[in-house]
Image (cartoon, rainbow, N blue to C red; front, side):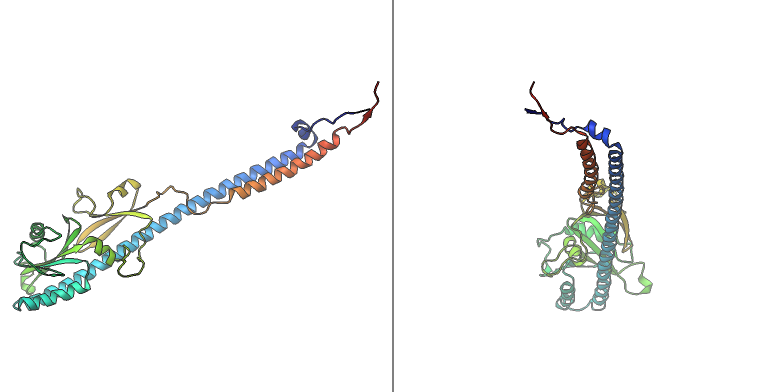
Length: 312
């Protein structure tokens, strides 16, 4: 006595036995996949829009904080200039006392140069009055050139690109309204750029023990003086120009600075958490599997059962 095994199940039997179920499963799978692609595309678009909004908010914060910090510096420098003018006949020690208070409140000031007739007479640093041959972190000859370049101006101005790692704030000193066209002299304040960014809240200040209010962790940025288009950026990194940056113009002390920002990871990076395609795939496969199982059962019922045969 022998047993004859059944025929093995195959796709031809499944399709032949239950084509409608298979077609329905395939249709459902395609629909789910199309929906998943649409959701993923929409999620990517929303993410890129959110990324651009974040960069725009950062640009606005940089503009607001940096402009506000420099405007405060200019007001304080003008107040110091007028006080020095009123007390210009005071002793050197008294003038030093006035300047010291400015350093106490402006840690980013590297030096304050007194320049009656636009010729430097004294250079004050946080450590004291500097001698002519002292080693300073800036170029005194270039500082004199900055003063001469602004001799026709009667309002404060900021000179960029003349000092390495520093800016120069020039504040004219006028005697009265009749002499506005010819300033009595000027203050030339040398500003440390890195310390300025700290004071403006753009770099974490370890000494202050507080987080930076402007988060530059995920962006590259640069600042250029529009009056000097051939110069390198005086703040930040020039490579941001190759990243299709968002740009913004800052109006500071009569100057126009171009601010450029771009995300470090680029604009095309998939943002955030995408739609859960694995989960959708599981649902899709589950639907297809259920339909296939129905076909399997139908095909199995159509197969011949084990039967017994007699030997000849």
